[in-house]
Image: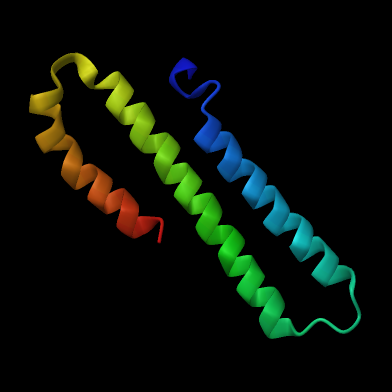
Length: 88
């Protein structure tokens, strides 16, 4: 997937997710962490990963359907809408 190589925004998102996971790891290692807080952190990590997946998928689809962007945009919009609703 050469179209995502060296994408600084994607790398920043992955690093942010890494920070969320590290925070979750610290919370799980602590004796006084509230279960609700852990569940909230887990939901945040899941949302961040789903957002990353959607971004990569959208870029992938746009890159490989770029032969006639105007024609494919009308076909791509409903597919992306379904993916967005599924990944929420």
